[in-house]
Every structure is written in structure tokens, then in C-alpha cells.
Length: 408
Picture 1 (tube, rainbow, N blue to C red):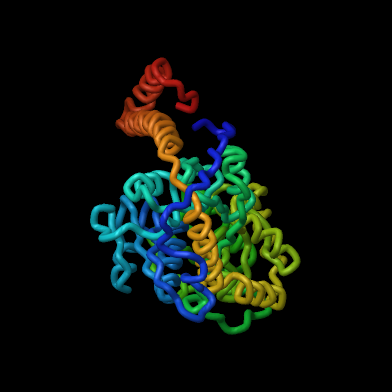
Picture 2 (cartoon, rainbow, N blue to C red):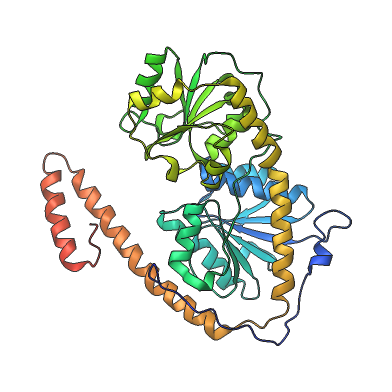
């Protein structure tokens, strides 16, 4: 479906359908836990980045609560192996799942739609992590019973894309594994070491500006991220060694949980130094792109470095550790699953509406995959030595003649 198109959700039938579970059986708060099978979908389980870490942490927290998580992704790798090592089933083939899950926790539209079509009796939720990524574009499907967003930008994207059919879109703010990211020793009065914590940091992006700002402040800078070949699968071991961290979103949250002072920063722009006074507003925006409103220049970053305040950073860390813990977030998800299973048990599945939604999805995303392929071919042409730019311009002109995508 096209962005901005409002879809009318078909009215639910009054005919009951068999229920596998209800809220009283799930009983997430403690007395007697009825095991629930939750299928988590994610586009990739390869590198240590955003949604991969969210999927890993949620699956592990659900397992610790006595339930059965399964994680499905088309791209497996290091994160998949890490999950398997803890006894959690990970697969890139839905046929390998013995019995249908009770509910689908959906990240990213393609694996979510695969799961919805493969398990035609299972309800789902959709959680949006990105306000612009193509893999995170919200989709409508009748068995997606609730939509959630990690910040206001993602919430607005859901409402603009799906319209009233999305219902009430709630924020589910990111959480951090507090048992993994332990508090560091108190910060020094002046920052002694700084870290740029991002997979996007490279010499051809914004690393030089951060390095220049730190040099002017007399603070040695290290980098942790795949862009410089310094990614770590255990950032919790390295973060306590740094006093000041440049990061955004989940990386920023992990640094705050550790007790580091944080300046929001990434390739999209520079943000502000995180303070206790701005914490609530910044968290609702996921410490993310919506807050990166300043140019990435050394003088901008130096101004934020000069706001370093160890006492305030400690207050921020305490807020994270009291409000953004993974175990509490998992309890919230289990309560949501229970509510959805209760409601879903009362209604018949509308196969006609599902067929219509699936048809719209296939039509839209088949076209977008072709456009993505065309862009990839144009980029490949540009890399040809000596004549690459000329061939690229010629190829783009030809593709534009036969493509409806003006961004080529």
C-alpha cells in the first residue's frame, strides 16, 4: 500500500474461534506461568546492531521468564549463533518449527509477512524501529492486532502509512539488559577517555569531526564499530573504560546504563549532551535521529563536550537503570501478548480481508524489489575504473526512462 493511504479494518466477527491461551493462563506476573511460544521475526541476525540486539535480548528475557521464544530471520550469523548457544531455536526456514507459535512478535515487514502467511491461525504484533528504513516500513494485515513504535518518529510513520486501521499505536521504548551492562566506577571530574560507539563511524563519514573535537578538548578517542573494523560482541566489557561516549539510540542507552556521559551523534547529524533534565523528552525520541539536528562539526561537538557533568551523568544513569531495564520490558510484552490472545480468541479470522491485504503487499513490494535491484546495478556501474561515472550517468538515464522511481 502507498504511504498515507488509510485502510478500513474489517469489523470483527462475533463468532468465537478456539483459543490456545488466555490471560489468566499466561499469568505473567508470577503465580503459575503457562508456557507461551513466541515467534520473533527480524530481517537479520548477523552483526551486533540495532534490531538484532533487540531481538536477541527479548528472546533471552522471554526464555528466562519460562516461555519459549523462536527467532526467524532470512540472514543468520553471529547473533543467531549466540542465541543457539543459549538453547533458543533460531531458523531461516519456518518449516523447521514443529508447531505453530501462539503469537508473532514482528520486526520488519518481510519476515513478518512470511510468518503470518505460514502460520494462518496465529495473531501478531508489529514493532517499528526506524522512521525511514525500507525494511521497517509498516504494513497492514488483519492479524496484526496491535502496532507499537520505539519512538514518536516511528509512531508517526505507522499512522501516516496505515491510517486509522492501525488503531492506537503505543510507544514501547527501548530497554537495556542491566545484568549485562553493569555500573562503572564514578566518573572523574574531567573526561579522560572518549569513545565513538557506532557502526557508521568511518573516516569518510563523521569520524574526523569527532576526532578533531576530542583533540581540541585534549581527550583521547577510540572507536567501537564495524565501520572501522573495531566492532565488539561484548561492548559491556569496553564501555566502563570510557568517561564520554558519542552515540545514538540503543548504543547511547547502553552507555548511559553503564554510567558514561553521552553526547548524541551519528552520520545523520550531531545532537546534544544528555542530561537528567532532557532525559524524558530524549527517550521518547529514542535518543535517535530526530534529535540529531545540528551539523557534525568539531566546534558543535566541542561545545557539547564542555557541558560534561559527572554528577548529572550519574543521575541519568540512575534513571536508565530504574526505568529502562530489559526484564521489566519483557513483563510488559508478556502482558500485551496475553491481552491480544484473549481478544483474538473471541473473533473469527477474515480470510477474504487477509487475501486482499496479502495481494496489496505482494504488488507493492515486488515493485520495490525491482527498484532496489536497479539502484544496485547503477551503483555497480559507477565502480567501473576510468569510465565508471560516464557509464553510471548513461545507465541511470536509461533506467529512469523505464522506471517510475524518481530517486534513481
